Structure formats: C-alpha cells, structure tokens
Image (tube, helix red, strand yellow):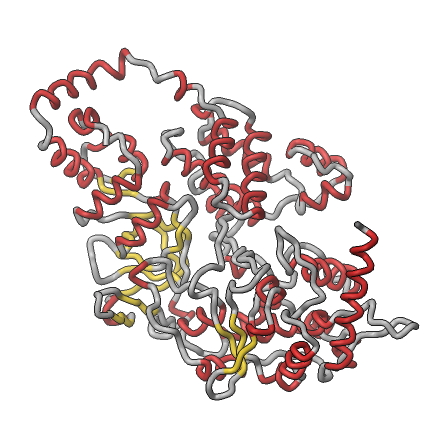
Length: 593
C-alpha cells in the first residue's frame, strides 16, 4: 500500500455509504486483491448490486439448506430447489446483497474473468438472504462494493502504525500534490492500443488458442470502433456510442468475412457490408455478451491501475433490460428442439435402417457412424459436442455391478477442454473441474440400440477412439468436423432448419436438461449429470465422489423423448464405414502432401 495515501487519507473514504472496491483500492494505493484480503481479515462485509436476479428468498440458511461439514471445518452447501419451494417460489431481486462467503470474495478479487456466486445475505442479517440457482450470476471485481467506514477504519489502523514524522510529511505532501503535480505523462497518455496490447501480452501462454482468438477479436473490436484514443477519454458516453456501433455488427461475422471474400475485414468494414447488403445484425444477447467481455477487459485495466474506473460496468445487463427482460441465462441462449424437429432429425436413413446408404460400388462414402450415435448420445446423456467427439473406447466403462457408463475426462492424447463455452457473460470457462469430469450412465435406449456391441467391435478391430473417423483440429478438437456436419450440412442444408444460431447440436443438450428438470431429481444430482459446478467457492467444494452410478442410472433412464422408430445400429456396417472413412483419409492425405 502507498504509505503517503494511508497517512493522508482520502475524502472518498469519509462518511457513510458504499463505494466500489476498485475505487477504495485506488484511494489507498493498492490493488483490489490486496485490499480485499485486508478487509476480509477484519471481517468486513462485501456487497454486490443485484439487477433482477432470479432465485429464492431464504429466511434461515441453516434450516432451509443442508450444510455438510468435514473434519477440517470445510462446508458443502446443498441447494435443493424443492426445499426452497420449487420453481413456483422463485422471485426476482433487485438491490444490494452481501456475498455470503469470504472465499468467493477473494476469488473474485483475483480473477480476470467473472466468478459465479449463488448465495447472498440481506445485510445486516447472517441468516436470511437470497439464493440463485447454481452456478449463479457472474461477479466481476468491478462489481464488488465495500462500506466507506470499513475502509477508513482499516486506513486509520494502518496509519497509527506509522511514525509521527512520516504521517506529517505525507499529510503536507497530499495538500499540495493535487494542485501542483500533474499526472506522469506515461499514465496520462496511455491509449486504447496500449491497453489491448498489454492485456493480450500479459495473458499470452495462459489462454488456449481458441480462447486467445476470441479475446483478440474483442480487443480488435475495441481498438477499431473506439480508436486509439487516450484511456482517459474512454468514459461512459464513449461506451454507449460503442454499444450503438456493436448493434450494427452483422451476425455470424466470421461467415460474413468468408462469404464476401473479406477475410481481413475490420469491424467498420463489416458494418459497411451489413449496411450495403442489409444483413442480419447481432442479437441483443450477443451484443450484451460483447459488452460484458469489454467490461472484463476494463476491469483488468482498473486492477492494473491503467484506468480509474470501468466505463462498461453493467452495460450488458442494461441492454437486455431495455430489450424487455433480465439478463438471459446460458440455458436461454439457445432453443431446445421441438418435438417436430426431433422427429425430422431422427428420421434420417441411418436411423430408419441402422446404417447409411452405400455408393453403387458398395462403399460408405456418404455415411459415418457418428451420424447415428452423436445426436443420440447428446439427447440421452447430455454430452457436449467436443467431449463426445473426443471419447476414447477406454472412457466407456462398467462399474462393479455391471452398469455401463461414460467417464468424461481429459486423459488421452488430443483431448481438449473446449466445451465449457456455455457463456452467459462472454467469459471463457474450462471443463477442467471435478464437476465437468464426470460419469454418466449409458441410457437403456442406447444399450438396446447396440451401443456396447459397437464399442466392443471397435476394440476388436483395433481402434482406440469411439469415433476414429473424425479428424483432429488443433484449435477446435475433434468436435469441429462433427459440428460442421451436424449444424451446417445436416440441419441447415438437408433439413432446412434455420441457421439462426438458436438451434444447433447444443440444442440436444437443452432437450436433455429440460427432461432432466422434469424428473424431480435433487438439484445436486442434476448439476452432476449436466456437468455443472455446484459453486466456485471453496466452502462449497465437493469432497465426496458424488452419487453412485446406480443413482445416476435411475435418473438417466427416467428420461424419454418423442422419437420416431429407430432401428438397432448395424455394427458390422458401422465398422466397415469406419474402414472406408480411414481409406478416404489416407487418399486425401497423399494428395495434399
């Protein structure tokens, strides 16, 4: 901390009320993370402002939620929506809330991205509060608030430790500094380009290639639409003008660049293309996600003392609120397939006959086994595209009682944690957690369709992966080829389902989630089956191995969907189709050498 700032004090810290943690840290010449540690040690409360958050009012946490404490005193809090009154008891809350757990505060203050939080208190009570469904809204450092009195009390206690002559010199210096000493040129002249370059440089190596590409795209947007202006001029008004520009960006801009042969098109050029050809623009949700992503960049700049305050805080939520509702949850950003659409999807020849069609020469060049299995595995197991596409045969296992299950993990060459892209705040989430690396029993419907027989046949044939026909992409993993087939060729071209971003392969997972929600299973089991974290806080970390495979199996087998008749998979034809696919791969590989 800045000794002179501690000794001299600040007008910002006087009086009652609240101020942002980042402002308090700036007043004391320290970082938000270090100040948070000091205040947590003094048991100071931290607050956040809720804006129409959906959840349950809790009158007594200890009575209404189950708290399981281990020998070390760590606590797992089980949020069971049925004990809270079910869906009918949910309400929306707007106003200031206290964050319940100190561990979450520390995590937020140190994170570059938002941290989901689900449990809050109504100050000054320690018993009643507000609970959001897990994982909860994302909280950024810039959203944290503290009481002025708590910060001033900390400053006073630290100042008392200083020698009298140090306090006197600091007070005298502070009296003249503001009037006579200008900001150093290096601070005053920092520009948007300085910010974006430093932001990307500082995170280089910590991000995976796809994550780096998305962040660079966001930085390009900021630099190209705002311009290389001094950061001091990037205020709230400038961000509102930027929001107006973002609303004019065409939807699916990467495809637009390809379609109009403008791979290097800047954002102003993309907007010009959209104006010229009357192209569809970004959805409100997509605009809000971009604004939230920019808010994260600015929050980082505030923590690094490159800026005094975050000019984009809350703009994404404000935009959605103006559009007629609160911020959309990740589960609302894509649609589940309707019964009619499921009927279309599962009426392909390979579902009707158990195998695809051969060419006149007897080859399976227009059919791959993943056409049959991937949609079924997503619908009946909730698997994400890449985590299904990258499965090894060794990931399909039997427990001690003979129950077959999928072991989703990141063990094995070529596996990537790309599927945590369920972004409600434009943030990048990793699958590399104990919750996402999960076990899912194989649905009885899949067993009846010959899934294990096919797995065994692949083993006998010498394969090691469930879908050896899929090619690996160093950025998108094995899911890239599968997604291109399902989303573009099958849904878009063959079935004529609109390519509006609302219905994709991921929609099958939404069907799974909807059906799972109707089973009446406890929230914790649903979270485990979906691969959702119960909470990011240490106090809510899981220290058990979760429910048994048998318990999971009962929940999975309770799921049913209005599907047309699907014939049992032709195992022999499937293995032959793999052989033909690999032959084609080899031929194409030789041609491109």
